Length: 388
Length: 234
Image (cartoon, rainbow over all chains, first blue to last red; front, side, top):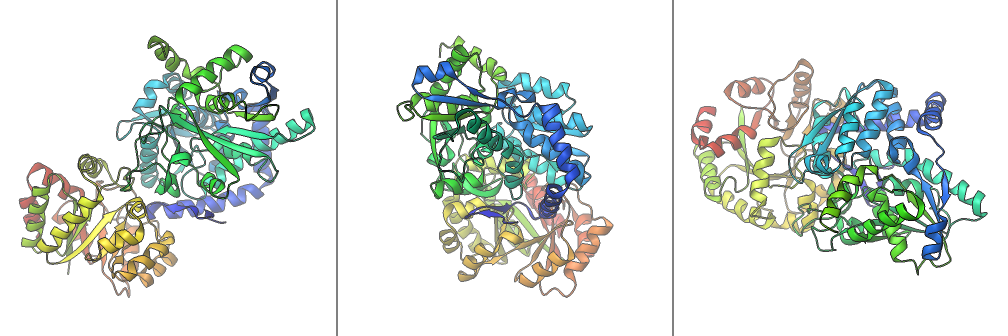
């Protein structure tokens, strides 16, 4: 298998992990060829997770902003976000490899919940690392993970967000590499993780392409998705990358585009090495990884998946930012207009389309609604106290 | 023969006590020094080295580390290495970094496995800097053969699965790997990760050519017991 997307990707990890990565790659290749494993995954996707997810024409939003907007409803997947596509796939892969212990990082807690869910389903031991700051701002998800039988470890070092959680999960993996599978939640990390995560998220793009063709008898003009690490975006983009469809990845612009106040890695960063891969990175001039910010814990990350860096450089996908306040506005507007409370992460994609509605005038737009927003009510309540 | 190396976090806990520690290492004729250049996300390090790195990063950057390492070169007569993470070298620009540190013997990059090393190695060669490769208990014999062949300085044997600052032990399988790495190797095999005291050194040197002591050195430097710590290692 190729370890790079153009010049991006690779395996920048301590030597101790190299054997585990090559075993994982080999197992993944065998897993893909194994018909029983494939059937088992399809069974759980359909009967347990609730695939396929609907494609919904958002009539009220469309008439408000003057274009035709379809939402791919990953928020309706079991556990409330697209993350379960990947965790169901990887947990079956872990079982296939004979691993009994699962570790994972989580930012917003959606990947942690999806991992704990899949681990409960297959009866595996599960430990989730989560930054202390994220545990505070996404506390309902912490409770859910515990209820599902996972041990949640609070990471109280560094930024105390997703980045620190990944550091700590990597440390656990180096120690327990013989018995443990690291169930990485985004299309980031060392090869083969970006390939594996994409493989399990491609189902979004495959379904959405068929559904929009059925509904409109044509492909959309634009496909829009939010990008933190980039797993939901790579999943939906994969369905349209070979078509002449405009694709836009929306990053977290945070409070402003000054370094430290946003998480818009592809928009503002430059290539660097973090968490095993060479990819765009928010860093200072001396190669130290920058502090980042986003109102949404799931986008609050200084790196991005290496394939997105490649898609940016070859000009296939355009990446831009949506600010905290614009995402919040979209969060409220979609709730009011459509009765759909989106995750703050997904609200960035919706917010971008609302803000640039003149660009999409009379166009057919597909937005990946990657998750639902129940988990964010605490953040919203505390902002309302401050009248934001 | 049992070579002894000390790992120090650059400019930690203060510039003065860091240089003083370098002098102590020279007085006791340590065989080599590894100067750690702090990185914001040190995934191979335990909490002691990590928090030392965070302390230093509050006030300094890589240019300061390079300047301090030039001073170290004047104070310490034996071999000198820089240990850091890939993005410090990559983020500065590999050429620029190599040109600035051409006076050291070698570079140790905690998150640069053998498979990703070729590009950096080509750059370092031009400046006469060696790239140190790691062997671990997880390495296969085929991997070890490749690493032995392409090394032109010591081979860093990571004694345990885990991060820096753990306990030291060499299980049967690991011992066999150390012995295999040493067999017909033109280079020294140095054991690191978890070495704490004279007993650990003695045990490691039954199989390897030497050891490097990191976390314990950093801890003792912070608590002010560095002199007696190094004295007791000899």
